Image (tube, rainbow, N blue to C red):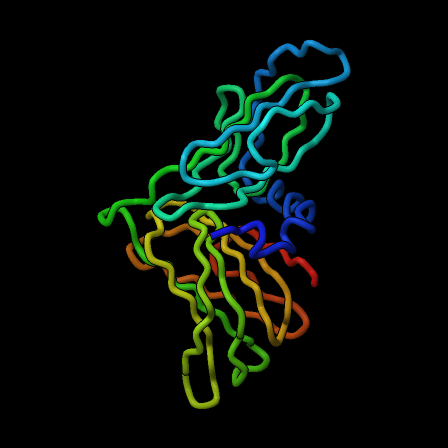
Length: 228
């Protein structure tokens, strides 16, 4: 599944994603930069392990020293999941969207691993609702970015005149935190991103929205809204 082109909005608005990722993600580790041949420019070699495709694409690039570049997982192949970005011997970030400021030559690798085997894998149920319009079932789809999986929201009756919508993902790794992207096509239209840890064989993530604002998913640390 080609994530970059499925949700082109994320590519266009990636800087908005990265600001929030920096707030809620890991601390940026120290990177041992390689000595550059030139004073004002650095060389960046981007590679990938089998299992997916990064953006910028693999290749060798020359950019001005101090330039901040955006790294994004563009595609995840079947049977794999994104694990982390590796920069100059350092595990830099587990987020599929991140930035790095280049102060020297760098080797950057997008690391993909095989999807978890059955004993360490579970299910993630993403449950959505409009709190101020309970009779309106959310429409759209959900992406678990590290797995490259997209599921259409399915309407679920909760009570008379009360509907939720759900997307169920199989094969999430228990204990791993995933990037969940929700694209709503009715009600509060837009693209929303949060992070969720698969805590058991069946993990349940509830996210409630209203027409004016959205509530946080329970127990999670942050979200971002990308305006259409």
